Length: 339
Image (cartoon, rainbow, N blue to C red; front, side, top):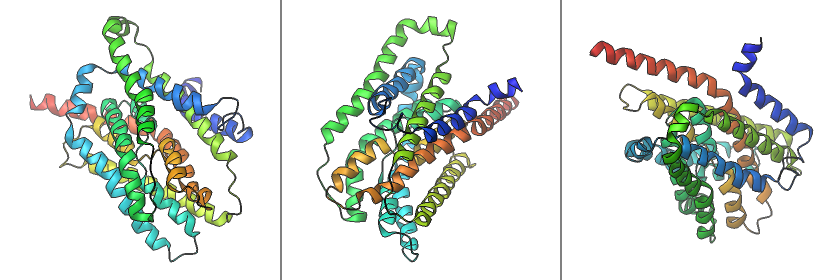
């Protein structure tokens, strides 16, 4: 029993932190005791990429940068295919009684860029192509600064100035700089790390639990006003089903026989292509929809999408890890047989 608990400690941790968030959301909510607007937004995200910079072999990072086909797949999927698919879904749902502002919120979710942390943490937890996840999360976030306002203008007719320099500076401080610092330090402590083998994966998983906790604290502390509970439940169901379909679709495309992606690449593609950023999304919404009386309703689908993507990803970690190890073993057997 103890061995089984140790093996599934991460899944148990998810249940525990969500339960704690439900009991006392004020602790980890924005402005709460833990101050997630600082501890998570800056410290946790910086820790993730410092951790990645230390653990990533420089040659792997260089190799990932040259994997253009993977990058094109991820960016076109998340910033072209998903917005188009969401637009089609919303057009169909317009014939239902679902709140029109929640429908606009679903369109907003589709237009959002990928996040800078969750896809990287999950890919690392599984053991996938972490370097590819880092590049696509960071590059997608930079692209989203320019592409997302344009998509919102196309689908919703809303436009406004976005503080590009401020967001670029924030991304540089929390993503690029820690990654470069980690790579720099790695040159001097490489031998020590190979001897001691620091638990980088465990550290990332613990940071992910902190993010899940504060995310659900924020979710449980949100006031949805006079929104109909049936509409809210419908949006939750739609988002869960959508994410499951997107995960299944990206996995199928990345692992089909005609594909040249490795199992590790497929893991990075799954998470980097389907996740959407709450950290960049909410500030953008507040700017693009400044003065809208229904801004809170428009924001609800994104507030739901974020914890769902982390929760689903966390639950999938052991399953995907088992598949990836099995697939890699089969590849080795096939190579040895060919030799």
